[in-house]
Amino acid sequence: MAATDIRPGTGSIRVPAASAPVLGREESRVIWLLLGAAFVAILNETTMGVAIPHLITDLGITALAAQWLTTAFMLTMAVVIPITGFLLRRFTTRQMFIAAMGLFSVGTLIAFLSPGFPMLLVARVVQATGTAIMMPLLMTTIMTVVPAAIRGRMMGRVSIVISLAPAIGPTLAGALLDTVGWRWIFGIVLPIALVALAVGARWIHNLGETTHAPIDVLSVVLSAFGFGGLVYGLSQLGAGGHGTGAEAEAADALSRVSLIVSLAVGAVALGLFAWRQVLLQRNDDALLDLRVFRSANFSLSIGQMALMSMAFFGAITVLPLYLQNVVGVSPLDTGLIVLPGALAMGLAGPLIGRVYDRWGTQVLLVPGAVITSAMLWFYTTYTPTTPVWVIAIAHTILSLGLALSFTPLFTASLASLQPKFYSYGSAVVGTVQQVAGAAGIALMFGVMAAASAGATESGADAVTAGAAGTHAAFLIAAILSLPLLVGAFLIRKPAEQPMGAAPVH
View 1 (cartoon, rainbow, N blue to C red):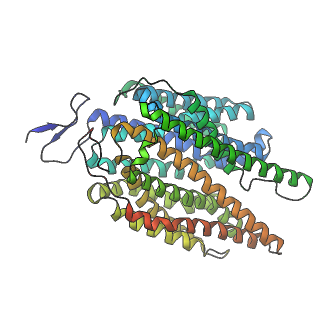
View 2 (view 1 turned 120 degrees about the vertical axis):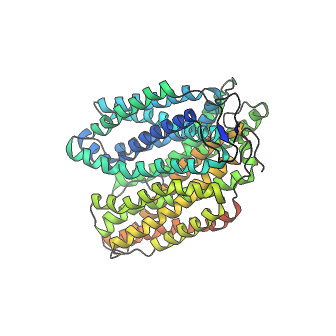
View 3 (view 1 turned 90 degrees about the horizontal axis):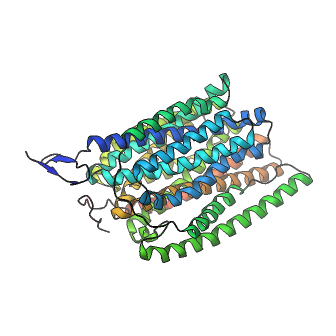
């Protein structure tokens, strides 16, 4: 059979006429390099939660100061990700990869050599800047070079990165903290990052076309205040003083003021940012082109993803606290309980991607939404005496339900856009995940703290109060999951189009 060239002039992918599309060697190599780099970045981020108690002791800082190592990372991600839509159109794939891995490597080196807290905080901001670029770059590259018929299985590989890195990170961090200390969390990652940077600089070539539009500084400022204000405000929810006395009351008052002011500033700035983008996108000069939301399928997918991220990230953040404070298991056992779910979620990704390529969205999204919602409602039945093996099985089933949902949502949302909007769509996906995840964690922590405090005031002991708090948080997650049952029926797989053609909306 004669081969047909489906991408003339751009490093074409030659596909036998009677066979399924395949990915060219160069394009495949670029994607694998991006996957490896993204894995390293996410692995590094998931080690920090375990390291916080050690950093408090070793650096002589307060818990509030230590929390900024996570909050600053999250804030930086929220500020940088919306800008990546413009950056990915303005600069080449190779330039963006070198920038992302270069920043991440420099941040990791600074962290490894940090003499104290201030320098470590700077390092976290530099790391986050590189990490924020990496995931949108990966998603945009996949949409640009992978034929529509096999995008699902490629997105399934992305789910491996997203799932396995958080599964390995805490275990790796625990082993290092118990042996050589917190600096080697960064020391282990640094050579891997440098190798990825060197190999990528050598082998990654430029994909797609670039534009030369000037960056709109006002949009950058409004984006920073908008998304940064929202994420910071949400991080203050339930973060006031704990205990009694004048200091605790002052901390509570300061937290409430910070919450209100940050959310107000974020909301106003975000509104102005959106208005500014509408004006600029008339000449294709927007920092984040909002015309992506003209696709109903994209908008529905983003809404589904936002609700799922809120419910998922909130619930999995509360679960370890329930296991340790209510059930009474050790941190190591907690990691082992959630590990099977993370592994199942990652390993199922490629299979789920193949199912998407062949049968579309609803065969995955409908059972995924049902399983996710059912398991979150099951979480609300947990008590201090719930067997650990029941919790482990339920978490694994929940993870599979989420795996059935995230891969088709990633793929269907971006495939609903015209190719020139892929970079903006990837930026929206990353921003929504970041903000929705922060909102879910903040909401459930706030509800958990309020419910626990109420139970304590009623005379409950610490375990009973903790159980009341986690029950309330899981109930919020379960309620958030209910709209997913409707959205799963509304989202469809866009019709496959030739490379470069506009999808049918």
